Amino acid sequence: MIRKIIKINEEKCNGCGACAEACHEGAIKMIDGKARLTREDYCDGLGDCLPACPTNAISFEEREAAAYNAAAVLASKQQENFQLRQWPVQIKLVPVNAPYFNDAALLVAADCTAYAYGNFHNEFIRNHVTLIGCPKLDMEDYAEKLTQIIANNNIKSVTVARMEVPCCGGIENAVKRALQASGKFIPWSVVTISTDGKILD
Image (tube, rainbow, N blue to C red; front, top):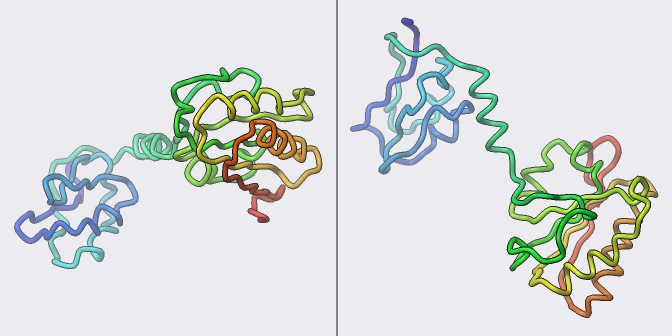
């Protein structure tokens, strides 16, 4: 189809990457130090990248191009936001020894936190090995399993993500007891999320 789409003048491009950052659809990538339109079907033709370019290397043109594919752009963004590194994630299912625990930053999260906090993958799961559970629903004490994981692996840090509700205290207490029982000194922190999706501390 004939439609409006961006055109990049590679001679003018200085390789700063500002246009790629400004492109919300991910149509522009930096390749060999130059900006390239890599996916015509990701370019919506609105030109958010134009004002970002300091050398005026980007302009519009009308030509034969693939139609803008909003569904493909959305799927791509969702995949970029997916940060989970291992499976399984349930505390009661995860093995006590696994290669992904070596030098791991451990995230122990109440399962509601991922639903309450919209950017959970990027802000919490990213670069962490994730373990989830709900002490109220599982009706079990996670401390013994977590103690084994911490004691038998080289865990470099532990982050607890919990909701503000009282029942989430169980997951925080289990981690605290596991750290004490492991005999290791490991940096740890607790993040509490409110029921309306805000970080409280």
